[in-house]
Amino acid sequence: MSQKIFFKPFWKWAIIVLIPVALFAHEWNAPEEAAQRPNPVPKDAAAAERGQKIYTQFCANCHGKDGRGDGPLAAALNPKPTNLAARAGHHTDGDFAWKIANGRGVMPAFKDQLTENQIWELTHFIQNLKK
Ligand code: HEC
Image (cartoon, rainbow, N blue to C red; front, top):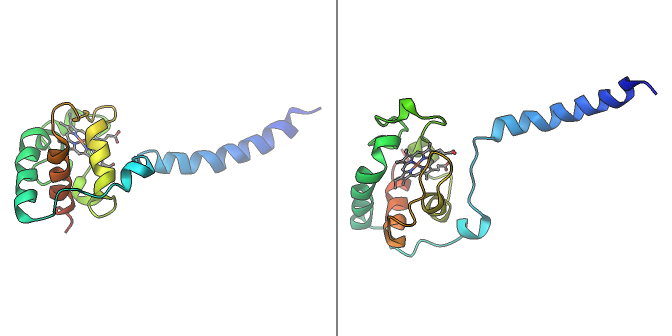
């Protein structure tokens, strides 16, 4: 049996599978159940302002003061801190809250440093970055 018969279909499938994986590898989604959790903190100016204060202290060094992924530490990091202004509106509050709590790789987990309410306040600040 010639190897061609085996490799031909394999490479076809490898290409079909690898292209989307390469394109979407940067995507990061919270588990569906976490993403659907409603934000228990009412969205008002005061909550977003508290969120901004926490953000400036804990997040701006990486994500930049306006959330564009261009903080002072960003140049040294791989992967780069996400441009949160671009993600705002594309994910639920629950999705952002879960990612902030649990982290991934370079992105620290904040569940032991921040209260749940502080994390929800951060999501209000992030969603407001949407232009
Ligand atoms: C040490 C640098 C660093 C700090 C500090 C940091 N982040 Fe991140 N953050 C990252 C990196 C890098 C990623 C991308 C991680 C990945 O995709 O694997 C990320 C990803 C995220 C995401 C996911 C965006 C998405 O939908 O893909 C959110 C939300 C986020 N950060 C919010 C925050 C908040 C809020 C804080 C402060 C409480 C914070 N980050 C602090 C580096 C940081």
